Length: 324
Ligand code: CP
Image (tube, rainbow, N blue to C red; front, top):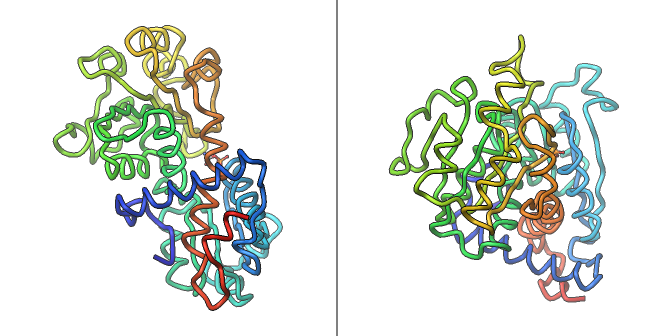
């Protein structure tokens, strides 16, 4: 496949191939081999129309560690601020013979749209409330490195599901890998189309976090999502206090989780609202793999660039080059 637009485009075999390549990349880093020549001569543009810390820097590091030329652009500082359209912007960058365009955009579907206009590979680095496929891959990588095969594992995703592209991509990839997923949100932040879904429909939904955490089905991992206040116009409900009481991973909930499963994992894609959706005691606990997710992000994005760009032209780029 030429693009990385949606988690739904990846078969189980493709996900496992990418994660296996990411493991090779991680091995190199563990051996202090940070740079490989695999993408020498390739150009990757990171165009972020929305702010980012993790995704943008890890794509840049991933490209640089594979010897690609990486260039960062943001809406501010580009001619987008002068009114240039998304189509003209994308076609202008494509005309410079770049190999990949990594895009984050506030409009759902923007990456799919751009992919129809350009010849280069397009990678979705988060489009509105739609998808964030490389986040789902790095989350799967993190989970598998601790839990092994995800078949039958129970992952609970909690938070502002309405605005969460991380939730959408994660549900798809986790199901692709055979995990059992329960999603929990307050009624006002649960996408209306999925209310009442049960595990037999693909994944289970609940408005009651405590019932899920204390339920019959032991939890292997809890993924807390950020309350995305910037996507809520006119305030949000529940209030911050109500949210924490009903849906926050508080110290008490962490203790109950660990009492039932001492190996339970706590994930958060970041950035975290400490004290709102996750208590500092949970974010910094021994069960938290938040920073593992960040470091997996570099290896997984190297793997994605490798799968999309290596060896799809005449230049000799053998996988063996990874072993340098
Ligand atoms: N998880 C994630 O996408 O973080 P950034 O917004 O910092 O890239």
